[in-house]
Length: 263
Image (cartoon, rainbow, N blue to C red; front, side, top):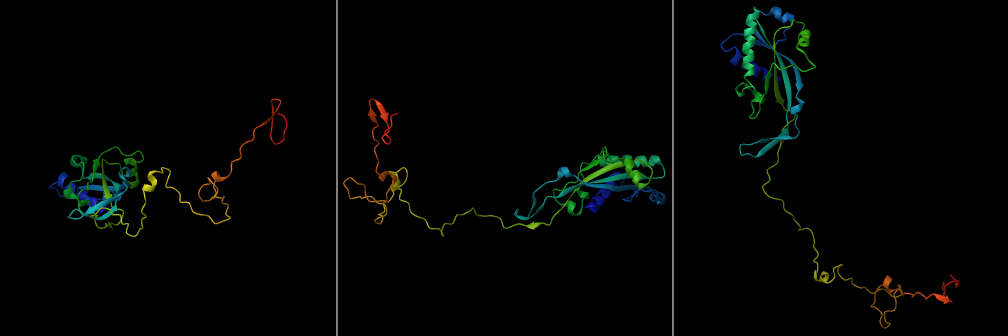
């Protein structure tokens, strides 16, 4: 991805900033030794910083479709990285360097994104855009004077050009065939029991319980007495009810039937 950005930036500079000129466009570190060996007008595009643009991070999958519009594969969403270039012009006279910087600034400020005709490789896919900014204030954690100090050279007029490029982070996964029918419920292997709803019609609390005869001696009451209910298991309602005895009274005072004590 970085080499593709290098070629796109070189092509943009040659086409828009120095069209018809034979100036060299290089990506070397502008150190003192490099500056001493230089013997021709040169534009230097030095890549000095690469970091992820976390604001653009996305979760999910990106779909790839065939000519018929059917999804053929899916791959994770790409990650985006900011590539910062230190752009400088090198000639024998400072005035010529300033004119070159002016043309470079005019070239970059006209572009919000890198034109598609300069993109190659994976960056040339449909829908891919490479944002471009120039001469923005540097982040708080980095100053251009620090960059020049790290290079061991003298401070020189320069342009800070930042491009944001995507990079794939995973292998595409093939997609299954498209769904052409709706879901179906198959109950062929299940048995169903017919329900007689007439039994519920007059019994809102449920169907009447079928009484089953119990074996003799199993706590059954004698159902053959006159007025006795039908045969069935003994329930709480079948137990005899003992009527409460009236309280005995003695001279207007009540006493309990068990102890006979006066209250």
